[in-house]
Length: 303
Image (cartoon, rainbow, N blue to C red):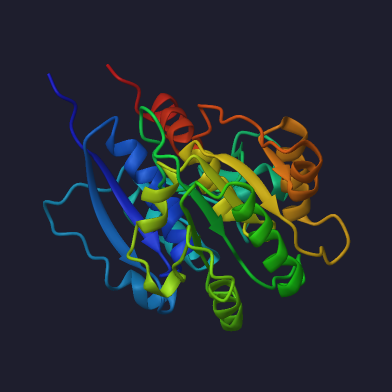
């Protein structure tokens, strides 16, 4: 006898990074149990939002209310109060963690396990590694200036050229983020490497990166791009870090990178120059899958 669908309301704030996290968890749940998903967008004031969530008289209440992004927190809690269900957020909340049924918080945010907090290795994502041999390609994933890293386009360009030239027979694709200075794309194209395709983020389709990192053999990611680092690891590629100047201190991004380096999941550009290799790819880095299993085991175990 099949189990009834799990009724999920996904609260989204329209930010691609947040959507990727919650959609990744939804996809992992969908691979395990049937779901009925209702999308709730929260760009407007949360009090107005609640007036737009009337349930038909015969509609069942939600089992799970899922949100990523601070804008989703109050609407999610108010919806739970009104309609019921388990409230789960995918980050350190701006409200007390005990107000939620569970918070999935990256370890680099200083998360400590508790009844209401489950630490995760980085942010969740929608990448699903493909079984079988890799396609032999290489990816160069470039971010930009951030709160944690400055921008040095000259040095980064030199690193890109060195990585590509070290493996001239490998097909490479470089893509950017919305933070990447526009002039950097032109400078990479001016390198005129036949094996290097330059594809800015604005020219990629939704889901393009998730599909590519699931098949690529090697991925080099600039150190500021935490989400892309974890996407590359989830996809099963060997991962190197392109160096950008840190802005000092030991913030959450730097703590997260140090944790990955200590565990041998990634290598820095300096380490690659010294040893000529990257750490081997390791299976099993998929936090969305792990969290989906834990949610089902905690609240909706199989009969």
